[in-house]
Amino acid sequence: MTTFVCDGSFDGLMTALFDFYQLRPGPVKVVPKAVFEPTLLGSEHEVVTDEAKASRVWEGLRKKLDTTWLQRMHYAFLSESPVAYQQLFDFARYIFDHAEGASANFGNESVRAVQQWAQMVSRERHRMKAFIRFQETMEGTFYAPVEPDFNVLPLIATFFRDRYADQKWIIYDIRRKYGLYYDLETVTQVTFEETPQVSPTSDVLSDKEDLFGLMWKDYFKSTNIPARRNLKLHIRHVPKRYWKYLTEKR
Image (cartoon, rainbow, N blue to C red; front, top):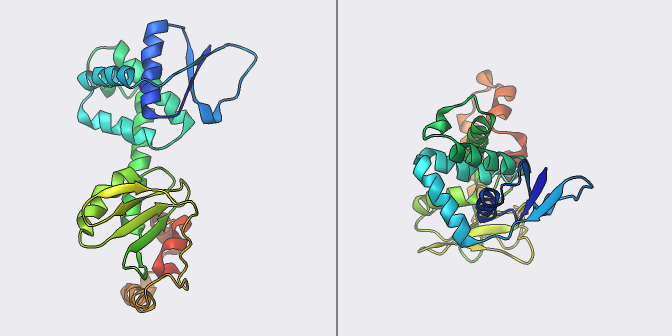
């Protein structure tokens, strides 16, 4: 068994595939460098990410996969799971090694795995669209901290740009320490040296936030039907891990 150690990027994964077909080392385990632990058995190969090699591999996949599967690969990668990283490698190999249409074979483990990862990431993307709550700052920029299970900010940028086109906003991923900033024209990626801490009582918030928060809570109370309350079902649709950023739950 040869362990391919990558930088964890998508281009790194594509380069690993290029190296695999060039070296033909036999069974391969692909591991992001951040989680790599050397072993006494087997050999290692350090994958040096190469944009040209990565592009050639991606073009090869584009010829054998439709856009749905290319998107699924992108989504699965955004899961940031080392397991998914290996399964994406296995999936790409399976596609390259078989005739066109192999992606329809859900009897193959890697095919199923990539689809399942894509579904989970897509579900998280959908939840972020529903659960993000902005708060207006004194400067007039709307700020929303989030902690998604997967790295879904790249998947929601267009949605929020179109939906809130007339407002400056920041959506900041606390867990991954980066965010999206919309300046009324474009969405750019931003990072802060210190994670912004904006509590409901913070003095960086607009004076109107208390009123807006109260109105939002009243709206949810007015739509609540006590006789139809089902906490178990509610938690299934709105998991508790999201509650601390939901205005109506404070």
